[in-house]
Length: 144
Image (tube, rainbow, N blue to C red; front, side, top):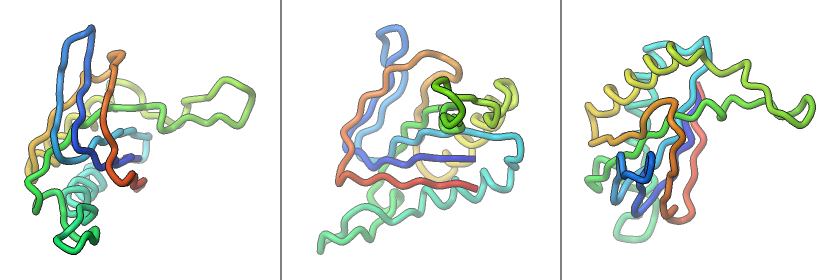
């Protein structure tokens, strides 16, 4: 499982010109799965993300979590996180989990993280336009 976490002050996802999900202060998550991912890893990363201290405190230090700033999440499925671009010019996606299983894992991931903070999403498998303002910029790569 790979999750790219980007701290944002606003984010939205459009599908067919219609906003499907958004968040104000929080994280945009790009989430991908591979065939060795487990429910236990999903539970671990959901909790880790909710408690990740990358928001500034009163002194400007990254010392507050999403929970402490009452933030939210925009979660976007992204199988291309498992792209292998090193053999030729067209990336291979063999390491990405098959779509039906990946959708199950993605739904489970969003249910787990919803236990901690509000979550909005795109639509799995759809062509999406994701717009956000990254603050910092702050970008964290998580992998299990």
